[in-house]
Length: 411
Image (cartoon, rainbow, N blue to C red):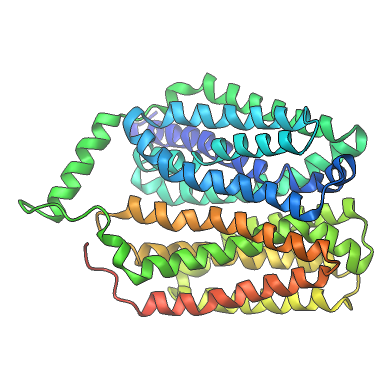
């Protein structure tokens, strides 16, 4: 084998391992919501209480995401990755043994601790282990496996719960995560990153940006309006997505009398549509080079679809296609969204910008289900789809404002 072939083979192995880990983190985003009907009956919980579990999960993840980046820089990505996967497995075990709401809260906290490490770990390994020609493929696979993790969770959890019970579903999720940890451990030599080398490269980049001068404030980038516009984009985007994932099955049951277990499979269709959409969206973003037009056009279509669902007049046979199309639209938006973040990121502060912007994802995922849980408890399931449409409408102005801001200057 030539050096290039050896390097490509190594890249494929690393991409595969990172993508497997990333998919497992997204899988754990959705192990809890499909079990809401079972947990509601078992512990006599309200929808607001169930939504609060997801809020706790994502708030903890938001905090850990910012902190774990410093830990990755200090001790390396591999041990942090192993800890994150192990915590997810422990969370599944905790859920399975729950005897009340307090143990479910504990499981959500543990799951949030594990989930928060993945973006800092994944992007550190990708940026330092993958050769430049293969980076686009790495980012693509990383994104797609996240959607596939979302797609797998509802079918996995509901299927096992129907065959056995909800405790066995959570226990199986814990066992699956333990198996993934074993695979990563057996291939640990592929996941070593040189911390000293990264520190040296970071210092060299800083000197290249500001040779011989005093270093800029570490927080100067927070003054850029485009950074906060991107944060708003991510916040409302994930608030709408997580709310749909959490309560769509229950909402469809109340509005259209679609069985909840069938509605859970629609969430799988949503995720599969997203996986296909992100592949097409990457091609579209490269060809059109107009991210604001792509985002606004796709979101306009998804808004109309959500409003149609809210009417209660859509044929039940069409709803699966609507969910797949919704997912496809969300997926097409993703590459253009990431391009907008890149355009809004000054040279030399990308890590800090991504940390702030991605925290919007976790906080949006925490707030959305909590808000809509009250609407569901109030017997207003149509408000779920209307609210999601409103959240998406609020995103559209931000993409044009980001594009119109001059953000290319260094901080």
